Image (tube, rainbow, N blue to C red; front, side, top):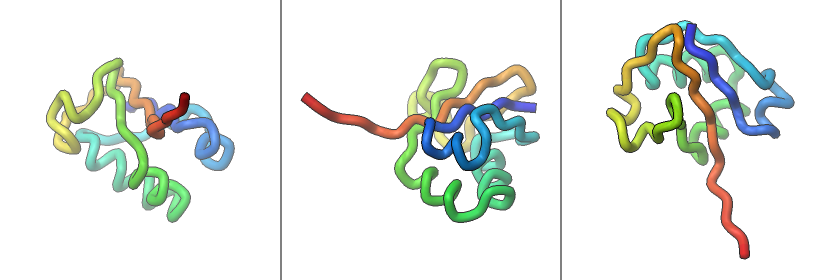
Length: 81
């Protein structure tokens, strides 16, 4: 199972380390939405996914394949000065 590490606020609601059986990032997102509902769906809209240290945008996007040893971080964009 792939391990999902959500950002802190979402982690407080769904757990800070979530194991999800999924073959692709899209499947992981779909399972997360089915399991956790709107808090997870809302978080997906504003998050970037980092798979083993690489942003999904640098890989195959939501078609990125996942394996049992993969760690996926949900990262919210941040800005400041």
